[in-house]
Length: 65
Image (cartoon, rainbow, N blue to C red; front, side, top):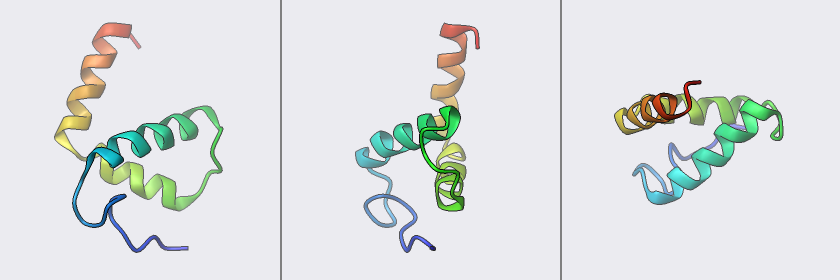
């Protein structure tokens, strides 16, 4: 199944993407979501965002992971 939207609310990144993206990211990392290409595609787009990369860098600095 191909998702017709690039983000949760269409072509524009919104707060809903922050929430849904964190749930998908967690689910893929810990195996609580099925391993579907649509989830990986969505996360690949999310991970390209500068703000996501900056947040992950900050989280790593805090946790040491």
